[in-house]
Amino acid sequence: MISSIFILLSLLPFLSSSSSSSSSLSSSQINSNSILVALLDSHYTELSELVEKALLLHKLEQTVGTHNITIFAPRNHALERNLDPEFKSFLLEPRNLNSLQTLLMSHIIPTAIFASQRWPNAGTAVRHETLAGDHGVYLGEDNSGNKIVDSAAVLRPDDVIRPDGVIHGIDQLLIPRSVQEDFNRRRSLRAIAAVIPEGAPQVDPRTNRLKKPAPVPAGAPPVLPIYEALAPGPSIAPAPAPGPGGARRHFNGERQVRDFIQTLLHYGGYNEMADILVNLTSLATEMGQLISEGYVLTVLAPNDEAMAKLATEQLSEPGAPEQIMYYHIIPEYQTEESMYNAVRRFGKIRFDTLQLPHKVVAQEADGSVKFGNGDGSAYLFDPDIYTDGRISVQGIDGVLFPLEEEIEEQESKTQKKTTIPLVKVAAKPRRGKLLEVTCSMLGAFGKVC
Image (cartoon, rainbow, N blue to C red; front, top):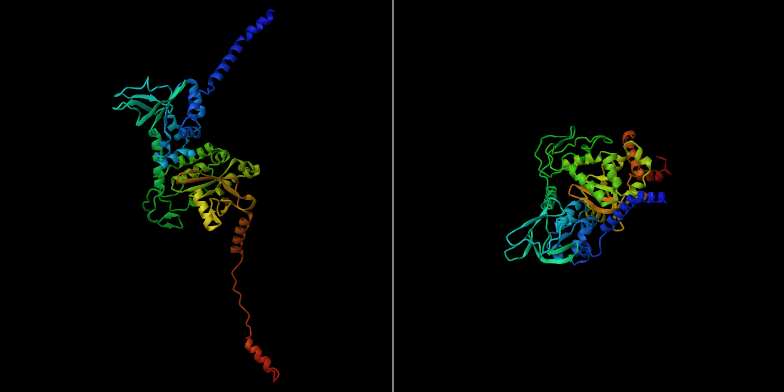
């Protein structure tokens, strides 16, 4: 009896800890009467769709578990028609996920503020921190007594009230300055990328240097071909890319490459491709240098399912990962629309790749773009994963390899050029047909012929 009591006393701390953990788990669960459930079921459908696309539901559930919240919800009309289409497409691009999350979190205050109780009076504006961190909003009233949030008017105060929060309907979207600056930066980058070069300085083919250095406008393509800027062979460290920019680089290539690799990771299904670019090779650094010098690239990115079909021997040979990646990089800027229009108009198209002298064949098939031939072909699977005017990333469902026929054809051409001499063959003199007929007619008279 005494031993059993001692065992029960020794187990009391564990029982209390398990009960407290179970109570904390139960408290973290969202009630059906929560303000988040009310938002998803409300008439603010555009905002609720953006919240789901921004992957914020889990974070908001954790916030509601510890705080009451206030949501300023723009009406659907403000998001459908009053919003700049370019800005809306900017928010929905996968690489701009952080900007979309910052914008949406700036509409949420981690405390409940009701219009009838805690709203500031006219003539005073009170700043409240939002879930976006540095960005805050000012609550106040105008001279007419209408409630305002920053520059937005509150059309429906206390529209939805729940025990853990409240939703106020506003007439427009609240855009943080950081998001606006990011959008302007992207838009100015596209404008720079569209600059038409004026003139082309001459290049000495013997030295691959400019004969007369000439000023090159920002955004103009490099004078030297991209193959002159690549590191020789499988790159351990990238070679300095020759180009018009030099120390005065017009583009931040390292940041753009980092952005598109992060986009691949956020997009999902392209982790192997990102791992090869960053860890197995130094191609990410080399691509950053090329973009900084003004070159443009289109990356055909095989998804994880396609990369999983590669044998270990195909990646273990020295230089094999680089050669595979080089064959998937096109030294020109192509989007899904431009490639599809090209193959629809011209049929088969051969794009240059960074793996000289091999080209990748593209053609139209089943309403999409098909790369390669036969069993080694791949379809355009996820179009326009990343497009910023300098780098274009197109997802494909297979790993491409140069055809053996093309390799043998290249070798045979080089052998013919080096081994077969050019010999002029002289034709044998041939007697004319008229002379033969004449001889046959006179042969009976004296055999003169």
